[in-house]
Image (cartoon, each protein chain N blue to C red):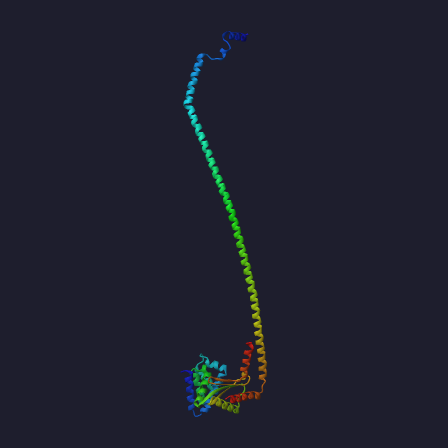
Length: 179
Length: 175
């Protein structure tokens, strides 16, 4: 019952559009307030915001440039590294080649040394053999000499006194004939 | 006084003796006997033994075998410190005596003794070869095996079998 009363009073007081639009005084006050707020925003807030945005953009741009620079440096470093690696490979190869050459030289020297030692051993063996032959020859000669001497002395020792005197007489006779 | 001067002095003493021939013979025989005895030489060369003891020993050994003059000459030689030079003194005395008689001394080494006939033949042969009289100093050494060696001054005539064997041995070993 109450609700029906209220609806009826509303229908009697205003139309529909009036219900949507504010009152004129409210509208003026609202516009003025908006203008004041807009003014403040336009005058101070917007520049400050623009400054912040510009700084931010500048910072980002700087970071981008820095990143590009870093990237360029990285690429340069990479290139250098690649070059170093390449050089290192070359040096390693050189070292390997040098090592092979040195090893080959050492091998040849060792072979040469071994050959010389072998020749020296053969020469020494030959020399020892010759010396041994010489020694044996001398020893045999000495033994033959000793044996001959021993036999001769044995024979001579058995000479009679008469034979001894004959030897002396022959000596005297030879001396007389040579005078 | 050196050995040569001492030997000349000995020869003068021997020559002045009435029995010079006998003293000469005895003296040289004593020296030869001492030289051939290494034990005797060791005693006479030993400085630790007093000269008096050496002379006493000489007297005991030779007093009844040789004349007093010969014994005096031997003791004089020992007491004067020539015990180390007995061989040299024997050679020098022999040489000086031979020279005194106008002859050369020939040192003869053989394995057997030489009879007087052989000695005279040798003297004659040497005189013919050298043109002067020769006196013989005889030495018998069985080690020479056979033959004879005669040394006069610097000259040597060697027909010893031991020398010939040595030469043969040298030649054989030198091959």
